[in-house]
Amino acid sequence: MSLSVFYLSSLVSLICGFMVFVSSRKHLLNTLLSLEYIMLSIFWLMSMSIDTLGGDKYFVLFFLTFAACEGALGLALLVSLVRSHGNDNFDSFSSLQC
Image (cartoon, rainbow, N blue to C red; front, side):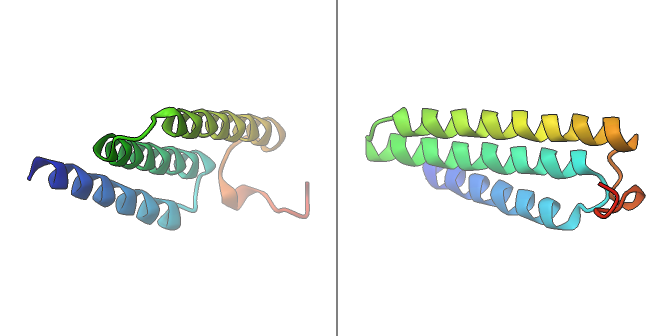
């Protein structure tokens, strides 16, 4: 019973993260935060699934490493964008100016 509640809560958090990612189009920081939330919910779902099946947890550690690299890359892009344009608002710049 409790394991199905954990799976359901992980799936609900994944769906909420996707909804925020799709609807957030004003600032880049909100989009990056929703991507990290999606990665966290996928990590939670994978770790519960692998723990239930009795498998190796090395794959989950590789996934966590790639999620951290994705977050660092997103922050580097955010810093580069803020330095070149002054803010992370999507309405303030055009792709033709870059």
